[in-house]
Image 1 (cartoon, rainbow, N blue to C red):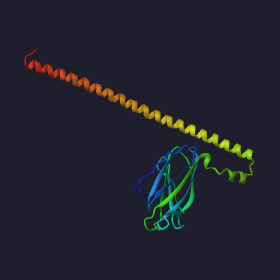
Image 2: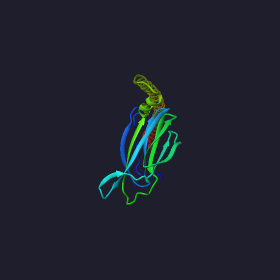
Image 3: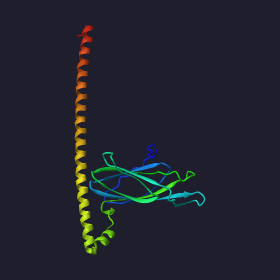
Image 4: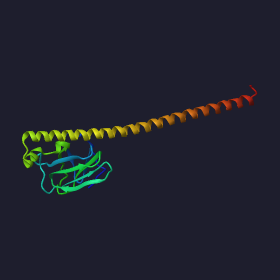
Amino acid sequence: MKAWGAVTLCLAVCVSLGNGLYFHISETEEKCFIEEVPAETMIVGKYKTQLYDDNRQDWLPSSPGIGMHVEIKNPSSKVILSRHYAAEGRFTFTSHESGEHTICIGTNSTRWFGGNRLRVHLDISIGEHAVDYAQIASKEKLSELQLRVRQLLDQVEQITKEQEYQRVREERFRQVSDSTNARVLWWSLGQTIVLILMGIWQMRHLKSFFEAKKLV
């Protein structure tokens, strides 16, 4: 299932945006995506598959027998979701820590024969874009104004999470920069000391040579 030797597709997606794309995949192949999101952020992925028909020379809806496997890992490489799905479906998870989350999608079926290609349409929504406000309005019987306020509050909350995450990233970057600068400084000092010692050794060696030749 986990054909890590196959080509891995990595995407960095902005937190506030949803992305639609499609990719081709073969039997038992797996492709992975990277989503960099703040903590406590909801991510919703919707997908559907199409199978290429050689006779019609066209992409057709996949048969129900084709299955997909979705595995999601958090920044600590811990699996937080691993499930089998049908040829079309959706998956949802909430990030509990900030950082890069890896989403891997692959086939778990060999029921499509002949080596035909499978096209997977994937749409990933993050943050408030993953919320179905129409369903919320219907369920909670919210007016248009109340729904708009709800959306604005969610947007403000998402912006706050993003700002906090950027502060964390900035702190990490500063630590890496300080560590790199310190290493460069010590490396430069080490090189200087070596050059000075080499110069002293060469001078003493030349002095010994000249004294041996009675030139000085």
